Image (cartoon, rainbow, N blue to C red; front, side, top):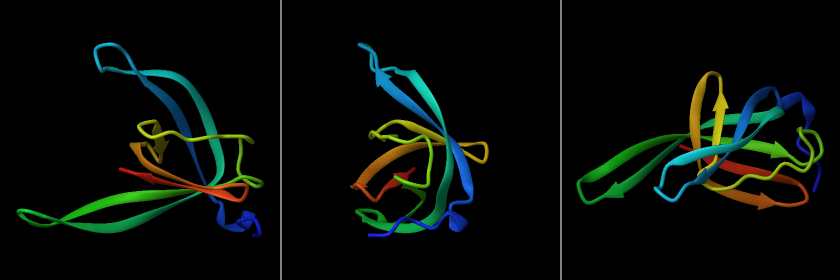
Length: 105
């Protein structure tokens, strides 16, 4: 697989590692600035017992070669800030060694 082209990796953000303490509260243990990433809005819908519910999320694309910092990993429940908004990581798809696709809610 080829890398994601640098020309479309136009966004930046910050990744916050989150751990839960013994009371279930979130504690930020580390942060890292992300550059040369891509954030795309995704329109998803889910069929619930009360009818169809819309769920707007972002998908973050992190290329293992062109994005930085190198060696970055993502975990469920970590936080990402992008354009002043804070998002929680819902799912991480690891396409190593090529890229990560991170679903944000």
